[in-house]
Length: 561
Image (cartoon, one colour):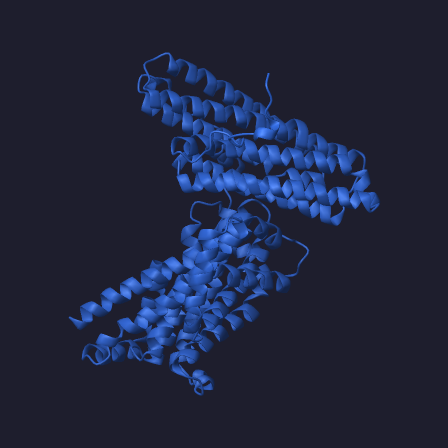
């Protein structure tokens, strides 16, 4: 019975640990997500600086896997080279080891403070940034509680006969322990959570230190397989980063396993307690991996190109050839027809997303040929919109329920907004980029940073809009409208800062003033068009006010007519 209670309580504590780590990651991503791209894709940094950025991001996100997936995603978009991506991931591995070091300290006294302050910020404060700070603090509090629960779970089994047998087996069978560590890290989808579990069990005496070392090294292998698995749908070029990381980190973990168990190399840590011993092994492994692996990030690019070759131009054309989801054969089945319309609206939105993507790059390094390609995509947007409008008109001639008719109208209205969004990019933003290039204008350093930040925010909100379109999730819809409000605040603040620079006589701001202000306005409008997908969902759930006007103007404003 003690054994059953141990595994049940351990499972509960482990799930809370995973939830808490995810809670912290979500808070960080929602608070700072749009800034990650700018930080990670700066090509002016050398590999050492790039690896430090990866380390800091992993500490912030509390996950090397999340950082690796971000790097892979930016490589898929052409913003990051494979060598720089590998440098980021190697730095992230060390960063996640530092997170484990911090969380392994006795911080139980912080739990009430973290929960009280975090809960108040999340539940009572309206400002988005402070709410996400509250989410992060609560997540850290839950991590500490889960570690306490692991300790309490081990109480019934410490005196049982099973513990010495299990501990002795894992201590002597280091290869088995290594594989168990790898599998657990993969199943838990978090090497940080897995290693925290192993460290806690070693501190409590549930596992011997030798077994803990093998489990931790195995978790490093499991942590390297996670980004490879989670990026399986991305381009071959982007996947070279997780493949390279698996080769470097996987090889190093296997070598370290045999060195740790067949040589006295770990005797340098004998002066530390069991938990710190394990943490120091993990830290040292990842630090040495970074030092040794960093020079190989450039050398390994060619072998990775052979392991993960890009598809030929002919195959790429076939893969990305637009295919309409509007099937006239199902017009007499409204539910199926509306699913096709939804897919087609999503495809239309994705074309606009591709158009928005290079806008800031064209502002900075104008390329007429690329501009013409983007403008040509607007023709595809217009054509898709016409097809959707015609298809929905045919669908509405049949018998539709009230709900289906309403959904058809909502999709048509959103497609109208997407068509307008394509026009904003093709006819306004690209024209401004071309004008800036022809007149050889420059933005002030702060002004450019403001525009880039707003553009990044728009790109993130576009992805969120697609999620809302497909899922009709209420929380996501509310978040999208909150983002719209935040975007308006940022646009207004940037406009005020720009006018302040003009008052202070900053010549470079004066010359580019019209383009700066027009770009701000267009980015805000672009964001609003995508955010419109949330309104029908919020209206149906009673989450929208009928009017923004106060109920009465007051007696001082009334008069007889």
